[in-house]
Length: 200
Image 1 (cartoon, rainbow, N blue to C red):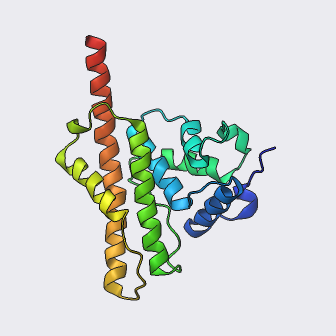
Image 2: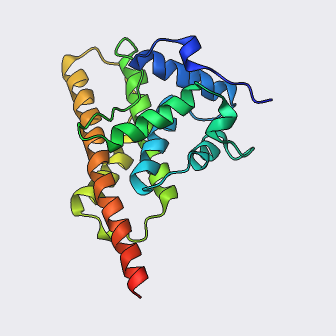
């Protein structure tokens, strides 16, 4: 039987506790990725697919060792909550999507490494979506994807410099806003390609 982790039984909702709960759940599922990369992958898939089946995301998260659905995880599971909340945030009009990273109390090096992991996960998820025509994306969005590749290779150095902290916050905000812009363009491009296919 699949061992589950019930979010509501484990923690109260907060950014740091959610990160830790997702990381614990991934460990129970014997996943080889962490919470930040897992969330980045979900965001990338959400930006490339208008109708995302959670099984596609979960399959990549656990390496396709078994077919897994949200129902298999059980009610209240943290990954089910992460899935539902992430899709709801992308669909909202208040730009509420947030990148899942360790708390500010965590060392600078760990947070920068997690941001790099989130970017790797995002690029992986967006690649899985297989958009029909990436060239149709604006230069801003194509530049954003190139920037994520650079950020994913960040060297996680320790720092207690306020300037570095501000830079990290700015990069996180750039990644967050860029993801929302990319989703809007990618889904529009996807629909346009489907309309052309229908006409032909």
